[in-house]
Amino acid sequence: MHPRLFVILIIVFVLAASLTGCRRATATPTPTTVAPAPTLAPPTPALDSSPLPTPTPSSANAFDGLAVALLTSGPVTDGGWNQAAFAGLQTLANQGATVANTENAAPGDQANLLRSYAEGGFDIIIGHGAEFGEALAEVAQEYPDTRFIQIGGAASNQGNLASFTFRSGEAAYAAGILAGLMMENGRLGGLGTVESPSSVADFTAFEQAAQQANPAVGDVPVAYAGNGAAEVSAAALNLFESGIELILAHDGVDQAAVSEAATEQGPTAFLIGWSYAPPPPPSASVLATVQQRVDQVLVAAVAAVQSGGMEWKAHTVGFGEGLQTLAPYASIVPVGVAAEVDAVIQALIDGKIVLDESGRVVMDEHHK
Image (cartoon, rainbow, N blue to C red; front, side, top):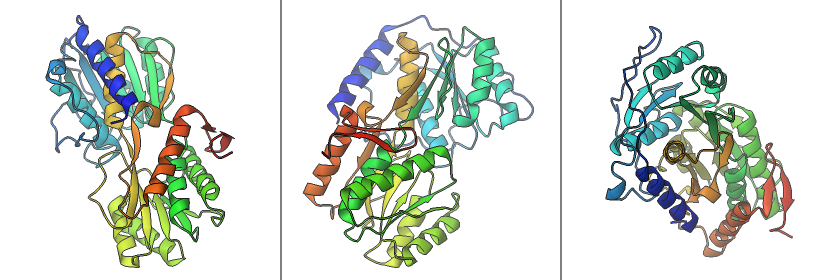
């Protein structure tokens, strides 16, 4: 366990357990006719949180008396972004919170759904994704006594709305170092779901890091294939057949499909995965997986609100907070390579390597 993470979690749970008096929801929100009624009926088991420490028995009721609602724009059975947030909501429920959630919240319905939860007496309402930014900003002004959180965006109002997102390019930069050091020929590629500012920033950081680690790395071709397994598999095979030897399977991409494509291509095809959930079972083709713990971000944000320590601004999180990892390394990764990647991660934490929002390196004292 990262020592910094241990300290952070201990402080969070102690503070959360020490406070009382939070409002309990006084009524069930009245759902609109265009979205499902808020419920907490887990359709699938919660995501395994074993990579991070579980709460001690003394924190079993840490969130007792708190009412928290979660809105997602997709189903909480997606095996990734939304299911990870739902797992965080379940953690809150297991520690005493009253919880509710609405799936598949369409853009035109988001504001009314937020109002419904606020009118129902929920203490904290979470919009999960960048697409909730405008609705959260609007409704937060209308309900100053309710607390609002966005995960995956940058909405804030210095009063009752804060947001959390992972630092642009940080994880991809570490992945690029690993890829560059492992692939002597430098034939790297990227595979994403849809092109967006965040995906472009990550692939930019990946390319720059790989070029830093290996002068043989040139331009890194990137393909976008949505998240369907068949489309992802076809795109991965196209990249491999074009001569690419390692693919960064970015945020939302079906990692199992890329892994199967690598296996089909042969023993010289590899990938680095990206997951909001625990990575798939180890595979000979997977060098490591970026794991971004959305569930822990949600729990930590709620605990900060409950403790009174929340700063109502746009927060960025990552390696330094222990909410993001690049692991486990495959057995074929040499100890020296793993050590250098870990050193780069520490340099990112210490501010010796700094990236801008576009994923470009603006300072590098580590590689001097």
